[in-house]
Image (cartoon, rainbow, N blue to C red; front, side, top):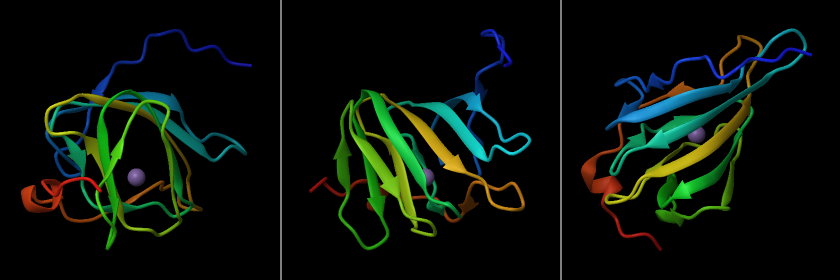
Length: 134
Ligand code: MN
C-alpha cells in the first residue's frame, strides 16, 4: 500500500494534444504489473482534446459540467455528470467541454507494451467542434 497525499501539482494539458486550457490531476500511473493510467481532467469552456486513439481503449466518467465527445464518423454527443463513455481500442475520437461550460471527467486507460496510453492526431477544428450535438 502506498498513500500519496494531495501533493502532486495540477499540470496544464499540452498544446500539442489539446485546444484551450485543460488541467490534469494524475490519479494512477502504471507501475510493476499494473497497467492502469488514470487522471482527473478539467476542461475550460471550449477546450477539448485533439483527435486521438487509445491502444487498449479508454473509459471516461463525467463528474462535473457539460461536455462533448465524438468518434470519427459519428455525431457529436453531449455529456453530463454521471455519463460514462468507453472508446474502443483504436477508435479515433475526441472529448472536451461544451462551448460555454466547464467539464470534468475521470479518464482510465491501460497502457500498451511500450507504456503509451494514447496516439495523438490533428487538432479538432472549430468547424468540427461547433457541430450541434445529436
Ligand atoms: Mn480519449
